[in-house]
Image 1 (cartoon, rainbow, N blue to C red):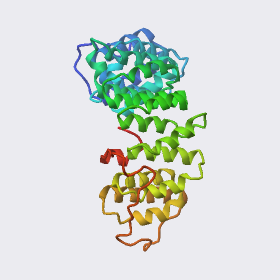
Image 2 (tube, rainbow, N blue to C red; image 1 turned 120 degrees about the horizontal axis):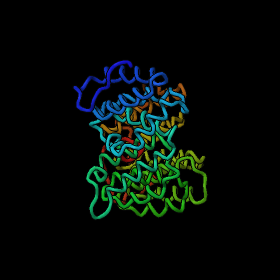
Image 3 (cartoon, rainbow, N blue to C red; image 1 turned 180 degrees about the vertical axis):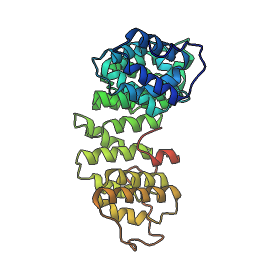
Image 4 (cartoon, rainbow, N blue to C red; image 1 turned 60 degrees about the vertical axis):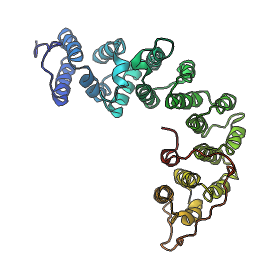
Length: 345
């Protein structure tokens, strides 16, 4: 019969011990399916977070039509607490959550809808407190982004645009815009007051050559926020707009340090050696955030092209402060996190 069944009230074991026991049960599943099923159920009941945290890598190599994988997939996708576990940073790491969700989605393609529908419980007059928690919502959207296709779930993502938290709205806008690839739909979202939403909508259109996209990107160059402008310039560069390189160079001379920092980030993200002279001029910028992004950009360009600056490529105090693509009269929203990264947190 193998080892005895571990009940739901048994003494908790370490993750390493739990992983080893699950591996044993999977190995004996074909010979003793009833015993394996019963004990796997009990292990999940006894230590749900730890069970889910170690299961992804064990599930991935199993045959998709095999009895063990089919059983575990049905067990977890039919378990009402799966969204709570996947969305809880205290229960498992993002890497572990993505690994498990990806493995489940291969056998259960509708997993994305199941998880997104749980998130809808956080909306309305009497929201589910777990499904309404912005930290959990963003985490679950990150899991879905990495582990599953969300094209079938745009309707749910659009409903999340009503969420009171801007971080949730910006993430939902990013995933919805990526799925729709529509310049017209994205243009409606550009009316959002929160710059994170606008920046994510623009980022979602990178590489999308569809009607209205290039026009939206050009319009976004006049946005008051550095990140929206930077994302728009990356989008135009990817669409081979001939003005994109010059406009990014102009942005690197903007009077605002966050605009200069974003320009440096964009140059590094694109990895084009043509930006080396502009980065040389920024190398001794007095603002720490600009200097940090310049060093990162130089490292990325060297990795991508093998080209780098000579040691004496620039001198201190060389940075100019002329306005870049976004007029200096616009109000600016300046935070370090926005300037340093490609999309909103």
